[in-house]
Amino acid sequence: MLSKTIEKALNNQLKIEAYSSHVYLAMASWAENQGFPGIANFLYSHSDEERMHMLKLVRYINERGGSAVIPELEKPSVSFDGITQLFESLLEHEKNVTVSINEVVHECLEEKDYSTHNFMQWYVAEQLEEEALAHDIIDKLKLIGGNAGGLYMFDRDVATFHQNIGNGE
Ligand code: FEO
Image 1: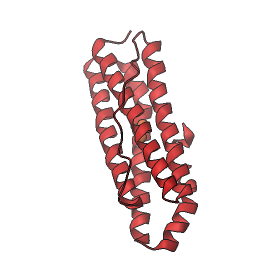
Image 2: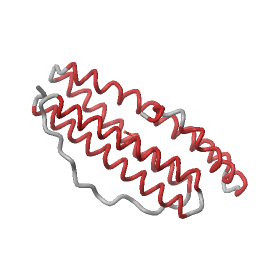
Image 3: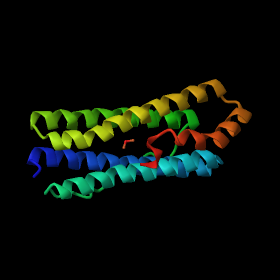
Image 4: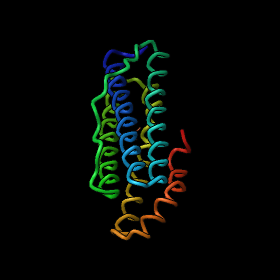
C-alpha cells in the first residue's frame, strides 16, 4: 500500500509526464507545419513515449492500492523561434523533469518505500538518456547553424537518433 505522501508524489509525476507528452505534441505539430517531417516524426514518437511514461505511473499507483488522478493540462507553447530554440526548450523541460524525478526518489527514501524507489530507477535511467540525446541534437544543430542544406540533412537523419532513447519504451 502506498503512503499518502508517495501517492501524491507519484500523481504529481504522472501529471508532469502527461504534460511532457502534450508539450512534445505541440512541438511536433509546429515542426510539421514548418516543413520538417523528420523532426515532426521524431517529436510525435517522443510524445508517445511520454504518454507511456505517464501510463506506467497510472498502472503502478493503482496496482499499489493508490488512486491515479488523470490531470487537467495547461496549453503548451505552440510556436518557436526555430529548430534550435525548440530543442533548447525541450532540454530545459527534461532538466525540470529530472529534478522532479529526483525529488520523488528522495521522498521514497524518506518514507522507506523501497519498492517505489526501485520502480523509479527506470525513470532515473531514462532521464539520463533523454538529456544526453537532447544535448547531442543541440550540438549538431549548432554545427549546422542556419545552413538550409544542413537542416535538410538533419531533418532526414533525425529519425535514427531516436533509436537511442529508451527503445520506444
Ligand atoms: Fe518522461 Fe522525458 O520525461
